[in-house]
Image 1 (tube, helix red, strand yellow):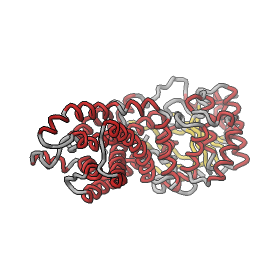
Image 2: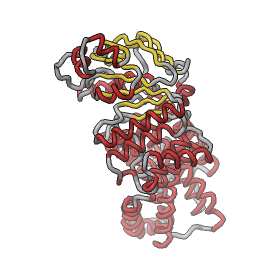
Image 3: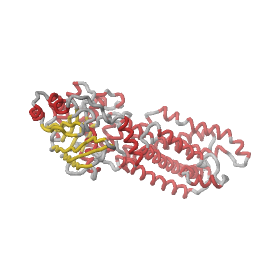
Length: 248
Length: 261
């Protein structure tokens, strides 16, 4: 178990030592929150949807976690570049443990990023329905972080190219975000969109958090949790398998 | 301790290691001496489970590194040709992480990390980030780290590349001492004759992926009728300058290989 903990701790240490990264990555969620939350708020209210800020805050928190966890996969490419990857590859540690350690480390830092954005949402005027629902929201935040950190790390182990990684990621992450129901209610969206969203793991994460924090869920919290856990486990296994294939 | 028979590694149609066979005894310091691109690093990568051979058999402490990757990884330590430290961690954190990866018990880990950092004169800087270290200090830290889990075999792939004579001298003194005191088998590659001459009990001269001569420094000199190992080396490998074959074309091939799988 110790290799998992130490590899995770390494990710956290590297993250906390890079203060500009922490601050800069708050920018994008903040922009969405202000521009959409306040910009579209009045229209949403007129259409009878209630407070848009209440609605999108869980989505924005989910987005912050999505972006930081998926992009943490690039750490693997840096490790390849600077050679540290070799140190982990020759170590007598099962590849699944390496994968889990890295993923949990990245997930921890992404969670922290999500919590920072939550604080920003609270300041902007977001109010969860009850304090008792916060642990459940926290669980969903954790699941989103683990799932997408595993995805990022898996992709990082498949794409060894520093230039290609961000392009592939943007190609993947933007649809994941926009089709997830983070910004619009799935209940009233067209059927085709509903079907597409059902294949988007973030839909379940945001839905779970929204259910916990705002009291409105499309799929139901149990479905959300089961789907997220299932996909996360599958991704961890694929990642470990990819890891065992890396040759340098 | 190490047994290699008819080892072959091909990258596409390029043969990097061509039918290489040798044995390394327990406690021996064995040197692979060869020009750039001779196949030294490729051989080390295959011995250390990082690359699978095209054909031939390998044995590390009686085990095949292709089949028993996990067991074999416990037996050796390695200092790579290029840096493999985490630059954003301190020297101490690098040592701790290594100890954890090799399941060294906490208490032993602390004692040994302290001993080795003091030995390699890095103790004063143990809490500095590695990116603030000079090239020589990084190298010393890598070697100290390689010894942390008391490996049976230590692989050193051109460990003195880019070091000044003082650091090189000191480094080999430590490696020799650890070899004597802890009985660790050392497999090193270098293209500095004087190092091979001074440190190694046996030397294999490798060129174009083939072993052209193997024996002690004295034997190699006798075999070629030359007075210095340098002259013997040139007599064996010729005087033409080599280009690294692992150029951009090779890298492209590697990338293509990853995608195909």
